[in-house]
Length: 114
Length: 111
Image (cartoon, rainbow over all chains, first blue to last red; front, side):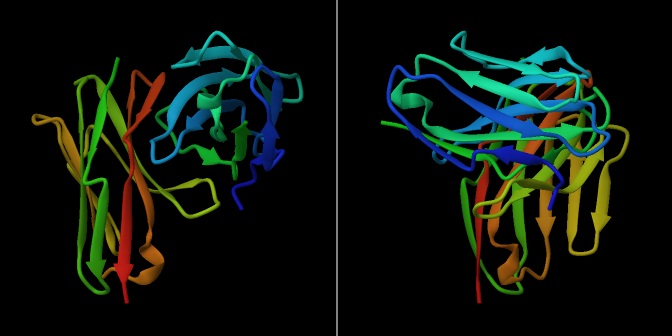
């Protein structure tokens, strides 16, 4: 158990809808990262937050947004969903803002868009 | 931006044999290279990492080598066991501010 929790575990929705994925980092970790993993694909970095502020942005679509709250949990909002958004979404956390350190991954949220 | 390529995409070995997975990166400024193991239904877990000031690192049956000149690094698993079966991801971090992952290698260890 990495100490990172993600909810929900599974999510099934329709095209055009909007969903929110939630992540709670390990106790004491200030950074939260979001990744998308499509079928047989690697982990695509979406965005990083550090202590409430956006730190780095990867291949995140404009339809997607995220935020980190004062208690350090984070939410990833996906809107106007398309079939191609079906994927595993992982959250990871680390103690510092630097990516040159171990990240602890949550179990992921499996999103299915029908 | 940084681009990380990983080979092979699938690897099947007999129990007890060695497994080698290779990754190349594009940006010479990359300075941190972790390897993650992803088991079915679970999040990825760091198994070993190496920084750019080191050429090789070993932890029991797992080792990583880094060739900065050629911009490639490799994961070596010796005496493989069925529980080593998983998807392995390499990654490269540049300027402590960007982490790029390879596409993953599905390793199967046959008993």
